[in-house]
Each structure stands twice: as C-alpha cells, then as structure tokens.
Length: 408
Ligand SMILES: *Cc1c(COP(=O)(O)O)cnc(C)c1O
Image (cartoon, rainbow, N blue to C red; front, side, top):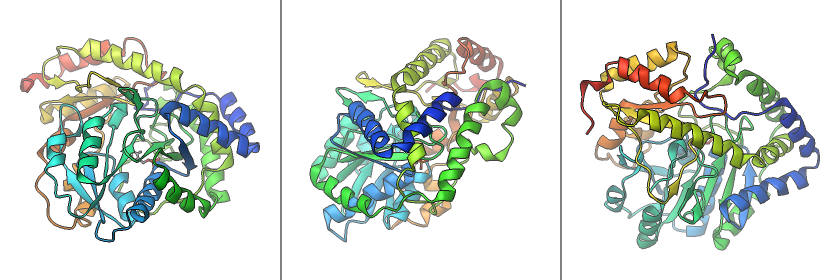
C-alpha cells in the first residue's frame, strides 16, 4: 500500500550521482557547501562535519575552551528536544540543565529561562523543532544579560528565518544537520556555523585535528543514499517502511557516534542539494500552509503559534491533540490511511532516566514539556505530499474522538 513517509528530502539518483562527482573535487565542493550555508545564514565561519551531534559536541568543546572557566560545566536546554542534544552535551564532558517549554510555541519559555540558576551555566541551546523558529531574540538577550554563550540549534531549520537573521545565526554559534528527517539529507552529516571570531578560532583549532570519516562509515552512508532516494516515494515507502535500515523515527539516547569531517562524497551531495534549498523549503511551506488552513478551527487540536517575524521551513508539521487518550487513535487512523504521522520524541527530557542521571541536582518538574510529549503529532510536509493532505487529515480528525476536551 502507498504510504507517505513522516519526513524526508526528495532527491533523484541523478542528483546523488552529480553530488558524488562533485565530491571528487573535494575542496571545490566544500567551498560550494560553505558558500551556500554562509549565504543562507550571513555568517563568516562554517565547518561541515559528520553529523549534527558531532557539530554540537565540537561547538560545546570550543565554547568550554573559549570561556576558560572550569566551574561552568552546565548547558541549558529545552526539556523537550531531540535526545541527541543531552547526549552531545554528555559527550562534550558537560551536564544538561533543563528549562521548561511553552506548549503553544514548542520552544523554550523565555520567562522560565530567565528564572534558571545560571551560576554554573556555560551556554544555552535553542531547539527550533520542526523548522519553527524559537523566541530567538529573547533567548539571545537573556544569554547576553546573563553572560553566557548561546548555541542556535538549527538541525531541523536550515533556511528558516527570524526577522532579518537566519535561524542558526543567533547567539555565538549555530548548527545544521543533514540527517534523514531534516531539511537536506546526506544520511548523516552536519555543519557548525559562527560569526564570533574569537570562538571561531577555537573551533578552527579543533577542526584542524579532526579525523576524516572512516572508509566504512563513508561507504555505508553513500550506499544508503540511493536506497533512501528510491524508498521515499509513497509507492515504495509503503513496501519498505517496516524494514529497519531506513532508521526513520528512532529516538535513542546514544553518546557513541563518530566525530569526524564530513566525507568527500557526502560533502558533494550536500553541495548539490544546497542549490535546491529554497525550492525544497518552499514546497514544505506550501504543504504546511495547506495543512494549517484545513485544520484551522477543528476542535480538540492546537496548531503551533508562529511569531510574527518568523519564517518557518516545516521539516514536519506539528500539532497537539489536546486529549492525550485520543492521540493514539488518531495516529493509528492516519497510519491506516497511509499517512506517516509520528508522536515525535516520546518523553520530556526530565522523564528520560539517562538524562536525569547526568543532572547536577534534581530539577523542578517540566509540565510544559510533559504536555507536549503527551499531545504532539507530526505530519509530513515533503514533496511527495498530495495537495489534499490537509483535507484528508481533517476528515480523520473530525471522525476521531479528538474533541473530548476543548482547546485551552
Ligand atoms: C537531529 C537533531 C540533532 C542532531 O543531529 P544529527 O545530525 O542527527 O546528529 C540535534 N538537535 C536537534 C533539534 C535535532 O533534531
């Protein structure tokens, strides 16, 4: 049966082949990718690396060296974000400190952030989940006022903007991911960006000593790229989606991952795809607008609040089913209809034992993050979505018992 993957980057075998070809001239491909990312984010410094996690670990290690204060070993993060974030913090030898999240915006609540204990905090990390910009000017202002650094995690938001600036360009450094469910895909990959010259010198020093991706890693990632491209169309995805190697939708806390340069062929593919970044994002935006329009006014659900000055890119379209008991039923019905809906990250980080074990002291409960974990459903926005996706989802929602509780 035909099935819409929950997320993905539409790409052709020709593009992958051209990307591999570009990778033969690695310095030129690197420069093309760096130029595309710099053009996107108006930033001076950019370093492609083996994953978003590697980018985060390296950026935090550089921040540690830059701040040069051994007492500052905590990193403030939203209590609802990708599990890779606290894992990357642990890998950098640091500890997370949690801040609650506003269910309406799905981003850190600036008031909760401002009330945090900053005494041992090195940096704060944004999340910009699903391509939706967080309250970045507010977060940046708090970081400046409190004398801490800021890392703008744009793993899911390459191409999104807030006001005059790109998401990823707030604070002292930012990062992008090229993993499977993100904006552009090289199976694994990512980049660090920065416009803080003093911090950039520390990142440069770390990157000079960074090993190349191993041959095995490179070959595995490159072999998966054409498989990914061929499996994403709904006719194929319906057949292969239960096979484990696609690895979509897994959520694990894992601190063992390679920290290396982005391989040559993957750099070439990232450079090739970055030329189509605006077109990919325009399509996602159009699909998200269609879903939002169809779901407007449906009772029992809440659509994300988008700041007036923000331009999201919608790696996925998130909504909340206000009655958590109705959510499983909705996801099952969407699944039966061939629509890859997900319940995103299953828990607030305050309820993930591996994360709790790394906290310096017990922390207050995180009701906003817990509510999101219980209510969220994401819908696909990629180029294989049919124009009537919103209408189809609407009729499923109206037919399910989502209306048991009225919108808050
Ligand atoms: C995916 C993701 C990461 C990590 O990126 P990888 O390339 O998968 O290592 C970090 N932060 C957020 C918010 C993410 O979604």
